[in-house]
Image 1: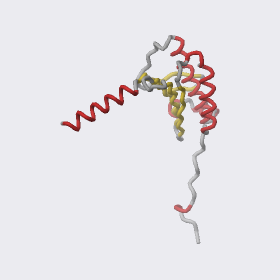
Image 2 (image 1 turned 135 degrees about the horizontal axis):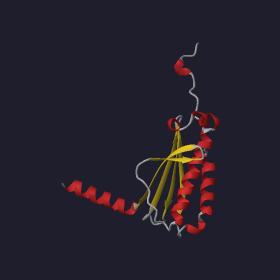
Image 3 (image 1 turned 30 degrees about the horizontal axis):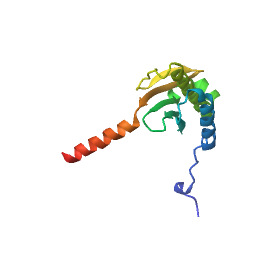
Image 4 (image 1 turned 180 degrees about the horizontal axis):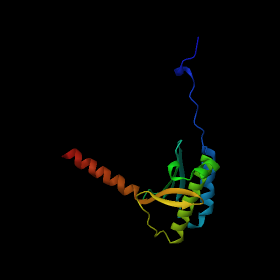
Length: 157
């Protein structure tokens, strides 16, 4: 019996940053910014890897869900120098994006949380890498209340 193209296993994408490593980075960020964190605030990191980009989201949230800061960064292959891509791995690029986001969080804390971010993606140079970055402060509790209110209003109409 010969193998058909459908029978061949597809290669699994390499996980650039396993969950355990992500948790370790979160713990280091909590330690690094401990003096700036308000009681109950949490730092969380989400990552995504594809063939042509790496993405990270750094979230700072309050315990009561009234505040959330979301900082997002991506390194897209088409934005990078070919020699840089050849000399780095996706993991290197992802860690550089995470460090860029950590620096943005540091700047945010240094100006007493008064820094404003762009809602659209902007390119920033970072140690030979071009990082697309955006950030936003949100009020999840108010957004949920607004959605419920809008949901009730739309049902009544």
